[in-house]
Amino acid sequence: DTAVSQTPKYLVTQMGNDKSIKCEQNLGHDTMYWYKQDSKKFLKIMFSYNNKELIINETVPNRFSPKSPDKAHLNLHINSLELGDSAVYFCASSLTGLEGEAFFGQGTRLTVV
Amino acid sequence: AQKITQTQPGMFVQEKEAVTLDCTYDTSDPSYGLFWYKQPSSGEMIFLIYQGSYDQQNATEGRYSLNFQKARKSANLVISASQLGDSAMYFCAMRVVGYGNKLVFGAGTILRVKS
Image 1: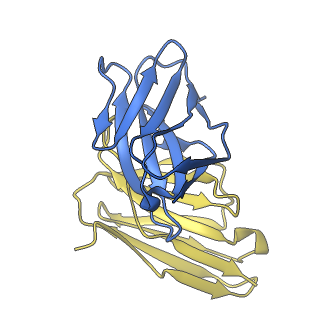
Image 2: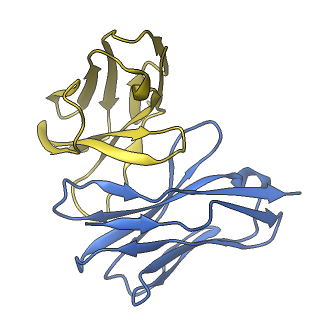
């Protein structure tokens, strides 16, 4: 009964490939996010969705395309992978509003070779 | 724009002692929330504590307390009676309503607890 689950946990792929990361939450939250954690551990918001609608796209290259088929799912598709895309990608969810803490998935470690 | 600054890249503390992790924030919005997260070496993000900008009392959760000084725009995390399992990366984060509900994170502080 994991609250926020994302798959896969590890992803190793070659440059130029296309890959997807899936995320599902069973908390009934209305907001979902994708964060990228770089090699220096810095966490940066990529996308924020509220009730399936894109709210934030933080100047992410358009090779990254999020898709939210419903409130409980937010998937991330990445085209033409580059070496610089190597990072840990976290899915998270929360209630809308100031107080709701964000619950994070376990992270997906993407390595582009 | 919102910004979180954590000036301590790394900290050491002796087991059973208290430690303070610093966090300063910058926002012009009067309504905001401040969060602390723990990231152990296993990589998961664990929520620790929340403080709202209008809360009169400092937040506490077990051994964690948040020293909120609004005028100084600081939200330091205090961990009492440190345990070896507290060794981890700690992130301060802020949310301002109206910006997609996003959390803006600081660079983090690595805490090492010595036995």
